[in-house]
Image (cartoon, rainbow, N blue to C red; front, side, top):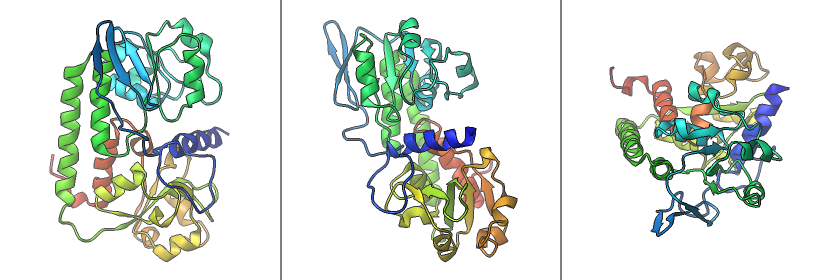
Amino acid sequence: MLRKFFILTLLIALLAACAPQATAAVAPAATEVPATQAATAIPTAEAAGIVFTDGLGREVKLEGPAQRVVSLAPSITEFLFAVGAGSQTVGRDEMSNFPEEALNVASIGSTYGDLNAEAILALKPDLVIAAQANTPEQVKALENLGVTVYYLNNPVTFAELFEQVELFGQLTGHEEEASALAESLSVRVDAVTAATANFVEKPKVFYEIDGTDASKPWTTGAGTFIDTIIAMAGGVNIGGVLNEPYAQISVEEIVLQNPDFILLGDAAYGVTAESVAARPGWGDLTAVKSGAIVPFDDNLASRPGPRLVDGLEEMLKILHPELVPAQ
């Protein structure tokens, strides 16, 4: 049951954030939809504070850096702690579990469906930050209660991710820490890009989100951050043939494309290399024969936060370990 809830919430979060849609069976929606405007907006100073333009095109005004922040999504929580605003984070959704210190922050419960407005108001936030996994209706409901809400679109490129790191520094008064973090993340991404720049042999990759139905497991199509990470790490996502960002792919298509690697984004839910190899029709796949079935921490690929860079580096280690600089 827990796994089913995870898959439902992951796909809602995921399709709320990815690009074009069209074919293949679709499940409850998903994260990473291209932003309808720039991922971040340069704040403007006013006599009584700072005005930001959020992902819904709304003006969000703060008297100064937010000191009591409630996060409505795991990626938001990770941004806050990453820029040094963990001590200013007074509330977080129940799925926020990184970094470990975030577990000490008061939970406001699930943010799928109706929000626990009473719990949020009790924390007396001067800012609530919502992600694209949340809904404009939730934003409106909180605004009607007098709560200041900033709605953040998911980044669709690493450049937008770096901008959002800077934004969190501005929202919370940690500009220097945020700028340093954005620079360090950029350097790490550049290192991977340089390592794979002239690489010609690109292995084919199947990334599994949910293999409950082994005849048509869920995977990621083109335009998602998972797809981007695979490509930047020197691989080819076989799900790129699909017309939706998150969709089911038939075992016949998987056999036809014959991936060199199978990455298990659902490994945390009990899927193993052995169980994959035992699936009907999977035994002759190159990845199965060579033992290239690898568990992958899906939080590093599906959460649109700072750890996407960790996901990129981890992908490079799997696909091209020979290109990883010696430590």
